[in-house]
Image (cartoon, rainbow, N blue to C red; front, side, top):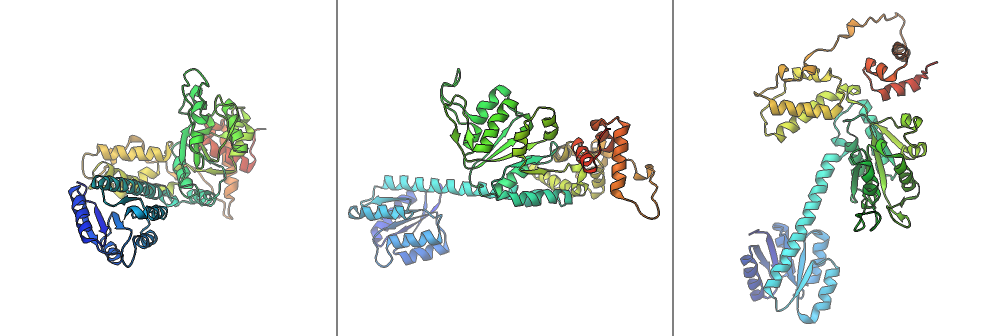
Length: 455
């Protein structure tokens, strides 16, 4: 039996007692009150899961009690009991927020059925509230770990754009947390109680992507036995997250552009477009401007998407965040695998900070989980670390730097270093970026900053 608490309010003592016994037999914990005033005292002292009240009572009526409960306890379900002659009043009570009503004489099988339904619905409401709270706890901007200036600049801009309906383009290497940032923007938007629908444009075969994204009508192609809503239509009123937008085929980029420009959805096989209200957040690890130059991505779509471009920095460019991330992920993995006594000594943190992390936060999380799962003792040792983390990086002193006595321009040094690295590899951007231990995107950004071009 579930043992949920129910309060029965009725001025008829015999009816109160019979109702109490019937509900106790059904497995509920039942208390009673003879009038509305006593009911309010009982509710304040010991909050029940459901209130069953007679409509006509001396003093405070059942309708007045309902009005008070709706104001003070809006989530508390109320079932009304009424005589046949006052059914219209009971219907009015339902309009004021009562879950249901029963007429006298009470059919106790019907009573138990109504109570079960009311509590089931209340349970669903509480579950949704719990899930929303969990999402808010997990996906708020303050849950994105790191306090480096590079990260804080992105989070500040993201928090400012969240409340608008602007299209957002999130760029960053694989594993930098693009989807996490997209969910934080959604969770802090006006649409947070509407759907958040994700589609990975690179994970679905090209021949299926159009129908998955835009949907189709019955008979649109062989095997289309019924109409199907696409991801865009499912996100109507909410937010559509287009992950890996750089993988979207050119023929579908035209249809996406129409959605962004006119809010129109073209279903496969439909005679006319449908109007939808969707906020789009897109993400990619690819350099879309380079793809535009190569004819792989539409220029008009790029500028439509890049209304608010956000670029998440790679982990190697926010080294100061690594110790906090390591501690956070280590605690998370200890809890996940039931190893609360396992320790990660602080002396090992520099080894995490000296590694380049090409897979970014995702790679760091995988390494931490592997350390926790494979640990043999109560403490992580140096030789438990992956081989790449065990070795020390080359000391800065091995690079000859002659500092002039009267100062130097840091930007001038950076520009000269970039120029020499590019010349060393005959302006091959990929090789120069690897040599400088930065991403190709970062290299291109700094080349544009200093106006560096091959003559």
